[in-house]
Length: 275
Image (cartoon, rainbow, N blue to C red):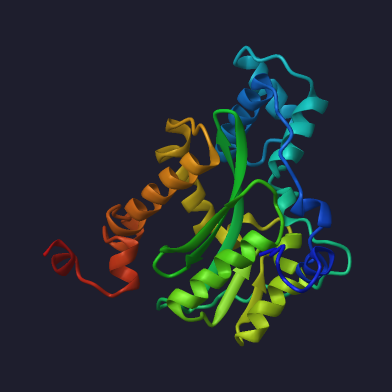
């Protein structure tokens, strides 16, 4: 999103995107192998027990032979962008002054593709570091429409994924996110308003309001991420792209009547896809 050769200064571009100028020059600080191992285990435990706080996670790690203090667990959780269910992830923390929009999907019948899109951010462990993944998902078909990786949780990579989805698939009637500062920023909500899209945000502490993205994270991590140790951001991007292609086009979903997201999104019957 930031173009060093643009006539606008980098400082002004960062202001317009509502990101810190330091983010533009950010280089990831090394994380010890011990902490990376702990972060991976915490991520796995959080996927299974999202209600577990730092105290419970510390005890669970201790039962696995991993002795670590509660404060250090809490520090690693902040770095990963996760907290307990009742407080929601740090990725959902709105910035002061950002407008929070009402949740529009309660009791709404979602019956067709492009009626509702949803977006979220998750932590992705690597062999020697980690990245954050943002994805846009069509609510009705569960299809992943666009995604981006980033080494920081800023607004720009979320807008890039949004722009790709809009350019390739048109626009939804409603766009749902959590209350994270990336999604409540004027840069992000302004882009949705430009397209005439209704903005919906999860209720505070309501993880189930964006349940289909949460289910995609679970499938991605247990079927792929936890089975690999990406050596670089490039390798993570390449292998995650392969999994998402599989998820969209070849992985049957029981909730879709054993059809794939592609079949449902593009209204293609199974026999036509097989042909």
